[in-house]
Image (tube, rainbow, N blue to C red):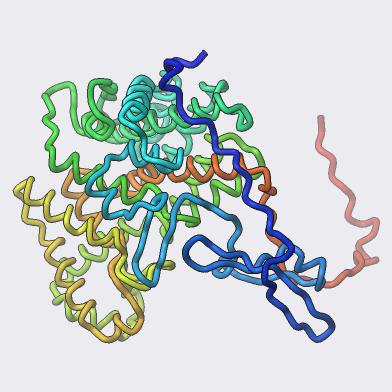
Amino acid sequence: MSDVPEQTRFPTLDTTPIPVIPDNVPKAVLELPDNQAEFPLVEAVEGPGAIAIASLNKQTGRNILDPGFVNTAATSSSITFIDGVKGVLRYRGYPIEQLATSSNFLEVAWLLIYGELPTEREFEAFDQRVRAKYLVHEGVLTYIQTLPRDVHPMVALAGALSTLAAYNPHILNPLDPQQVEDATITLIAQMPTIIAATYKHSIGQAFIYPLRELSYVDNFLNMMFSDKASEYTIEPVLSKSLERLLILHEDHEQNASTSTVRNVGSTHADMVASIVAGVTALSGPRHGGANEAVLAMLEDIRSSGDSVQSFVNRVKNREEGVNLMGFGHRVYKNYDPRARLVKESAHDVLEALGVQDDLLDIAGELEAIALADEYFIERRLYPNVDFYTGVIYKAMGFPTGMFTVLFALGRLPGWIAHWRELVQDPTTKILRPQQVYTGSLERDYPAKFVGIRPIRRSRR
């Protein structure tokens, strides 16, 4: 039985199927040397439409070769819209600038998962249910305590989430709406608890249990930075800035980790298993580890003693081993809308802490030089969301290894929203990309080996 009163139950899962493409839509014609094929044109609500090529192989005997899926829409989605040319990011139609300055993490999580902003009553019920689930099973904490203290936090997080699934078998059925709801709440509520526990274990301190009277972000900060020897005071500016950063990371359309979650989910793997896959995808330095790389770059500039302009010149000269991190984006060909908000938060945090961090000064000078330099302008290399986040996390007291874990915490609601959208769409097929084979043609096993390579059988 649900622990939420009937009048405050959560919305049912959206099971509205993606519309079937009618026969009378305009067609794109593909001319090949040996035949011709026609494909329906699919219009988007906003942004580029698509050519529906599901029948390509049937009509032509060929597949599309699109490395990195640069031109391939693998799904339809109503969650997030990005216009990389204009620098636009919207969650369910709401501009990220408005959400990051006026909303909070759990409200945006509800928006992403259920499609609309919650009413006051809906939000309060959601908030209370999340608080009620802050505490993880002791078995999860026991697992964390068995890990080496120097294990990377992303490895610890993936393992701990798998252990969470072992202790919560009642939330793993992807086709049971109530279990999906329970998995949603459990993951959102317990991810901060797990992250804080892995951090405390890494520094040899006792785990701090969650406090249900604290808000989502304040509870996380308290578990991270309080200890049993002193009282921890939560700085409101830090709490607000961290909440903003988490909101900015909540979703970003079909990125590598989200696509991984959807890929795994298409097999009807449970939500937790799919999220674990997303965590491991995010752990790659080309995805979630970018903010660590930015901080390392800024520290290298400082330790070198050279000017920022000198570093920029080395980048432009393409010197070996010199890389500009935190600029440019696979999607954005304009200023990342999240980057402006992060920059504001960086100044707010350092001012609140009374800290003068020369890394922020270096970052500001590097940004100013790059934005005025034709080399970067022509290549549309603008600061992205990772450029200032590392400076903020460092000022807050998070170790560098935790940066990607914080990314995962923020991205969690987006992963959940996409998993639910995919699993509940009856038109979903198991993701199974095609390939262009470039290996050997059929060949026979060499006759000279026949009978002289006996199979070695294991002894039992």
